[in-house]
Length: 538
Image (cartoon, rainbow, N blue to C red):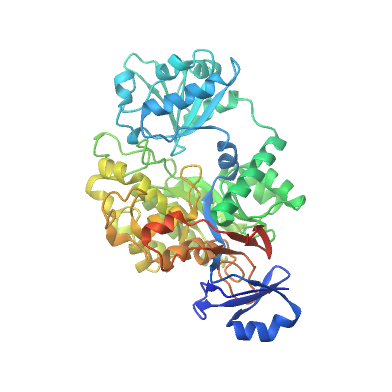
């Protein structure tokens, strides 16, 4: 038994919001209260740790993260740069240390943030071209995924290995970009991204396991004690292996790709199956693309592309078809939707599914929409009315604000609208979509309460400041909101008797520090299930 004393504890329990001491045993919290009460009840039989006035909050959960991709991405070239030239320099540096003929992989580029236009070097629609990579990598195949994970940039060697030519047809749900002469530019959008990776030697299971173990430690250091994982079979297999070895130290909710729905039904998997470290979440599908590559499905065209309304990958009818199979077999849905039209189609599908659930006396699963980046004004109330969780990423707002203003114009006022959704009683769960953005939850908290980037832009008031959240509301997105989305609100997300002993010890109080200081917070102690993952020093 352990008691923590002399602390400023924010419990996230509305019935007892603050305390100064707590007792825990067997991985759970026994009691929370005053020092006198905790010492009187448990002091004689417990080890006591004086936290010397530090702050304690519940462990934080990233409600949307690609665990395998993030873990392996830590080994890739970091292409998230301020300029195109800097990105090319980083790739060139990696090439110098890579044997001839071996693949060079990278992630994070965003052409919308580069002032040096790729179009000047043969790029199309503001994207970079294969020729730019060919100049620095004539003897290496190169494949770089965009920050959005909805576009990729390949050089000629990579295109050749993948068999992509001017005659290669677009795959379903994807597009191979071509130049004016009809030749592929090296940019692959949405489903076309699958054409190159199938030729890249895939990492073995042990390699994935090692990468995940390293990533797990990185996530702990940021303050994460749980994640909702959106990667596929290899990720799930590795997570099960880590769990079986007793090496999984994050609470993981595992989504099921919609293409595996029949397999999940066949073996009887249901949302919520598992234990407190690894459990099944919902069935994941994509209704559209993303803002950056102009593939998010919109009602009206993009401001800079009057013929383009994005790519609708699933309409309400298609979602309903597999959605009915899912809910009839105990599985909820988690649908990616960024554009206003995509969100509208998903909400239409969820409305029909709720009717189907009532008509057949089925439980109401905790359906989610991932991202909810922009809504038509008429659709804002529908999430709460339908009991649909808005799984959103606050850091996306500050990453995307320039592109959103440029591509959506005045419609951007309806984007990343956490305050409006919360006002309408929508359940919010917050994450990062890592490796799209950093999984550091304090960066996300900073974005949610300031609507500003790290450099303070666009202004002290933030981007569309009426959508800012209070510190408590933002923190709830990473704690009680994420726990509710996981169906674990009765034991996760707050520091209360009977709850799991997942907590962070902080030197800086996120409720009283300057708003800009929230982004710099790193925990000095991280506990999962009563076990220190990042141990206090001194």
